[in-house]
Image (tube, rainbow, N blue to C red):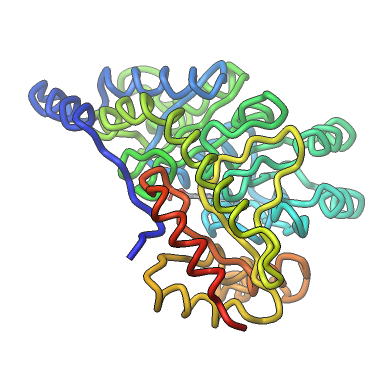
Length: 364
Ligand SMILES: *Cc1c(COP(=O)(O)O)cnc(C)c1O
């Protein structure tokens, strides 16, 4: 079986984790600060706060950017549920914009349609889905015209670039996840990056019970801290992420070259000037064949997954909250057609050739 995901750990992770244990300082500590600096620098942001998960990073970023109960926040329904849930945590209301058919990312035209009729839109969370940056040029134009906070959900997009600008600090804040299956991991973990010092200061308070001094608290905060043990792993992963990213891109290129011209399959689309970091290599299977294709891959030892099998507005929780079906037709079609194939850096050339050969043998 060629697995869909495979986290990679080396000697350095073990060595640093042992150092932390030997030091006796396993919660907050100097490894957390070092990891924070290292990841911020790699992502070319000015400031960064590491925290306990991508979900808490999103929650923190929304609060640090001033999102209040009753505010409306536009996002995509074609993402992991955490993106929308983070809006609910703030007492704010997610408003779903449709996606672009080719990139799977939020469609700025759909965002503008909502901005024209909805008052009280305070923020937009765009998601760099699968590792492909959103159309930041168009989103920044809208931000200027309609004045809203722009938050990047970059949980799948470590080191991805929109026209030479690394994602995470193009908008007001960018959120990352270091969950076990992401392009780099600390087990559970996250980060909020920003070029705004005030946003960073506030983020650091929010994740630490609103603390301004030892046992002095002037706002409601949370315990969203990352541990020294997790951070030790993160430091070691930072040394590898550039190499792993190159490998993911090279693997994706081989897959796309090998899968060209198949009538039932569409390979990922990358707009000119964008760097896709392939958290997932996700193809579209047409003609209603996706589920049959998935069974075929499983029968032939190729790991695969569906990201995502349902749009958020159709999830039972959101149905209970009163969201309608059919509000984002492009996303609602995508959930029926997408399938992710292995692209991780541990794949050998032989694995990639096997994946291509198996797929070419699929009979409709
Ligand atoms: C993984 C992920 C999250 C949440 O990250 P966790 O670390 O699992 O909390 C949020 N948004 C997207 C797009 C993700 O892929």
